[in-house]
Image (cartoon, rainbow, N blue to C red):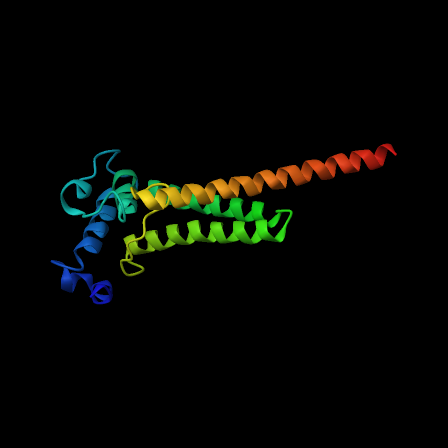
Length: 171
């Protein structure tokens, strides 16, 4: 049923296509600069689960294209920096764990944004760090904590290498 609504939500606008249509209307009413923080009408009356799965459309309505692009940019920056840090991890386990966690957070964000904009069928995934979802927030914070630890290990390895180099140059 979700797949049919995804293919033509206007044909199912009263039931399975309702959420996607309301999401599109939120983006449209946001325009380029948005309606202003807290001024979303879709989240109050029309968009079900606006605080969880479809928070990106509320961002699009309140902050417009600029705000939505900023969220996309920030997630891209997070993924880029985390992947770059993981490549420098001193051990294979740290590299693989870091890349997996980075992929998990980035993929979840990309799928959520694609669902909200109608590029994918509705999945029920939250937007990491933004949506209200208890378990999702905990898992995302644990993943980011592990990524921070991997970064810490990179910094320690770089300092040890610098100390070794300084010791060699003195001898």
